[in-house]
Image (tube, rainbow, N blue to C red; front, side, top):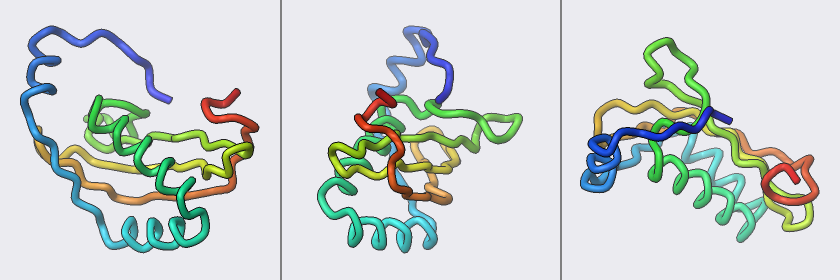
Length: 116
């Protein structure tokens, strides 16, 4: 996952006051529907965890492009909880808009969530 760092007070304030919208590309909607059918409630938990992480910090994950607008984030699921591992590619297209470009759900290889 991406490196975590302390953002300036001004940047943190912007994050708290701006409502961020997600836009799903069709590929994301299709993959999400399939994953929720396969994993059901654990899939919902994994999806909510990864999207919450992006809402909490839109710079989470690894930059894929030099500008850092296109990023890849991983949610490491759990075998014990039957949660899938989720890889989500997203692009910050505006300060208040994030486009979910692609997602992959896989059977977790980790016994517990958090790569334990």
